[in-house]
Image 1 (cartoon, rainbow, N blue to C red):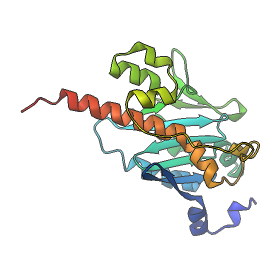
Image 2: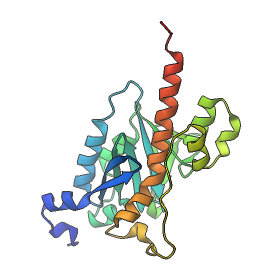
Image 3: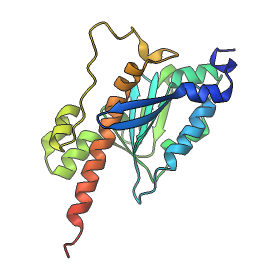
Image 4: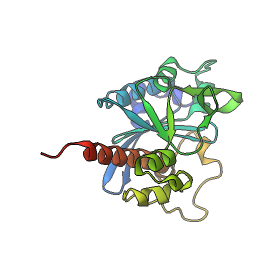
Length: 221
């Protein structure tokens, strides 16, 4: 039995919750390696998807050590490889499969989501892969909506500047990060803030682009 299995559910939920301050916004972040909390957290994210064409920020760190999703002011960090091991899972949880394959959702992420002619997927440990119905690279989205092809190869920081979204990358003091912290059972607040940076930025870029594009198509009175 793992140490986390010995904790009462209410304690585990509390221990999994971080209030991450990014600029003026507080991002309610859940970090978990337990399937039960993943299920409830995905449900909470889906409850925020009320728009006609919903989108979700996505990121993958170290082949599934951390699998991240962001919607509005909520972020879910699944310690995927740990979850599969601790819960003795032989297959990807159904709730996660259904979320990734939901035909109504567009996932927006950085360049670490693989694509081929037939599918988009996230590579995780043990040669497994998580298949997504639809994922778009944030650079492509920015270039397409801004009509600037060169933005496809831009860095995340350059994209933030292009769409005028002020998000500062966390400053990490040299030597302050633990080796292989991404696979640790417990993450510090500083580590969570660093982990969230890219998925949060991708979501905010997409949100700004789509808001601007929608406003531009609304006829003037």
